[in-house]
Length: 516
Image 1 (cartoon, rainbow, N blue to C red):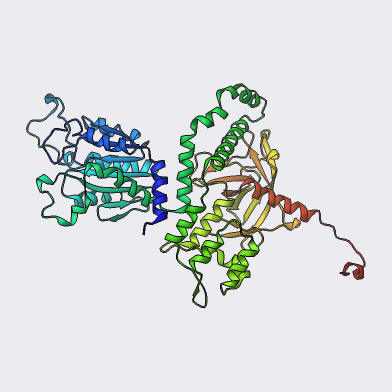
Image 2: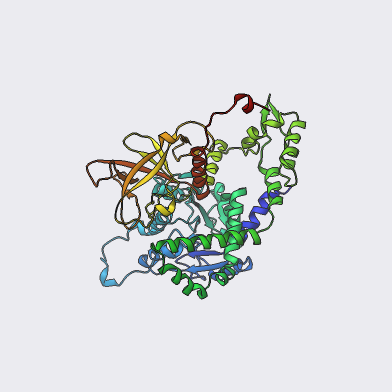
């Protein structure tokens, strides 16, 4: 039976993948009768038939090849030759008695490019070393040795995986030389030209195989396909209106932030209006990937129930009844939910933590080159007391500050469970202490109209507060920046605090107060 989820995932990956770049010094020597031969016309034809842009480059020397690195960072898939034998430089520059440098023949330049791609590029990459050599295992080991210090590096047979890169070593198909006659275990790693498009699609799909990645790739493909529509709404006709708005702002960076939010709202609306319904994809994922969970007394909840629970037509009461009728405590659905849809070999506890962070942390991508600014929802930890605080200063009072010191209001955070807990990146669960007498006020010195963090010797962002309103640099308290909460989460904190501050305490008849 076909894996419906895998087929659907391949369709999404195929929609997302657009371009492939080949680097092969033999690309302009297609008639060359050698195991290293490479026919660019045939390769281009096969990729064109699959609707993919295929760029093939044949560098003439090492410098030209290394200069292609920035171009390669833009590609969805990169295919590199291993043995690059470049044309000799002018004869007067060469020592006639010197031996050819061995490392230049055995992948030194390819290793440099792979190292750069794995460390500098933030785009997810699929790299294939497509070689006429037979020593595939040695090539794989050489690549791994070059990048083994990078976080997440792991090695398999003719493949290497990192956090955002997968590398596969494959042989060019030319069996007329009998190169793998005595190496039968490597025959599965030989690819003909016509096999390349499907191989690339399969490997890319395997690396991003999942319900959430499918949503992300499908949305990114939608954005790619609707660039013209986005530009029609955010066109140059708006330039004068934007600049007019900008020059009357006290802090002109506010205008840029607003434009960023308008753009983000446009992308959200596009994703909501253009993307298809994911119900079928969810069903396919449950059928093919999910393991029936063990809940109570070694009893499992069947796939049929798991499929019914994701029916959007069911109310929460109907879902509770459904679980209850299956022999479990329906009222425990909230407790069961985080482990109902388990996938083997996945860290589900960590998944719940990371998903929870995404729902209330504003800072998705770190490290950031832009320093945090102290404002409503900023969470800090005092380096002096090791206590956590959340800033509840309204944003309008956090910007456009005249040079000097301004007081900022904070509520303490305590390490225990409570309503609307907050997770830190280091795994602590914090809750807000709303008692009015525990509120804290710290004065900070403004620069450029705000309180901006700076990096300390440990590459951590910190805010420096004076312990009194006087500008005394010797009397300071240092706060390490932890995270910024999303706007609505931060506003909920201040709303809850205000409600508690404005509660009414009065004396009244206890008989009357206790009447039901």
